[in-house]
Image 1 (cartoon, rainbow, N blue to C red):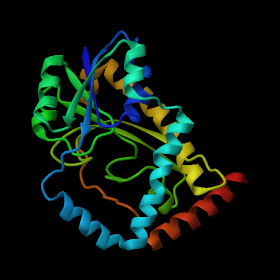
Image 2 (image 1 turned 90 degrees about the vertical axis):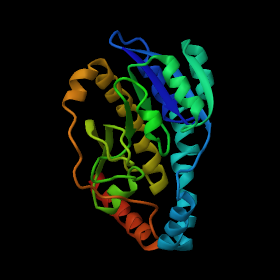
Image 3 (image 1 turned 90 degrees about the horizontal axis):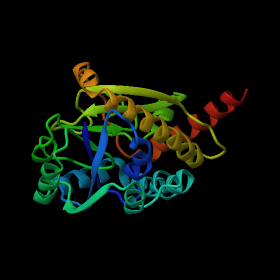
Amino acid sequence: MRVVILTSARQGTASHHLPFLVGDEGFTVVRVILAEGHTKPKGHWKKKLRKVLRIGPLGALIGYRMRRWYGADLKALAAIEDIAVVCERLGIDLVTTPAVNHPETVEALRASTADIAVSLGNGYIGSKVFGVPRSGMINIHHEILPAYQNAQGVIWQLYNDSTETGYTIHRIDKGIDTGAIIHQGKVPIQFQESLGATVTHTMKTVLDTSALGLCTVLADLPAHLAQARSQGPGAKWTTPTFWQFLRIRRNHMALRERSAR
């Protein structure tokens, strides 16, 4: 089975997962498509403005602060390399396109003649893109669906006083994180001294676990696709407000102390 990877990040989930996906007899990664730019869906900036108004200026600052936990800190902890370096070392074809929903991305997908595409680290993907491969496109969402649609990993689990997080592999449809669920896995939250360290260390484990889960799905894709189940009603999350962030911090301290006993 021929697999193509679509990503928008030079150092992200695709770079981390790719070494796990090489050498399996059940499938072959034939191409990685790196969409270097970003095209915004209709109404993007209006949604952004509404979000800032909803979470407030302090919430926006909190979101900016948290980016490092999921970005630079996670890249360093997981030793995530540039996708071009990984592809060259593994001998995988790398094609760059201007943006995810650009005609060049559509053409790169068609030219790969892939059976399935895997989205790793992208925003909105239109139907003209995810509909190209014969079996469509799947995505890894690093949280449990449908309870945590659109959510960043770990923080909202802490908000809800939970000690575990996880990942979901699902089909891509016209929504965001709403496609039929193919496979899920849960991961215990790894409590550290600070909230940021807890997020980063846990997300590193989630990445490792989801890479293995993706291998399992791709190794027997027809069976997994046949068992896919619709999500039903879900809960959508966004950047926390100041008061939500305080609750996340309080719960983190309490759960950390409880787990240490």
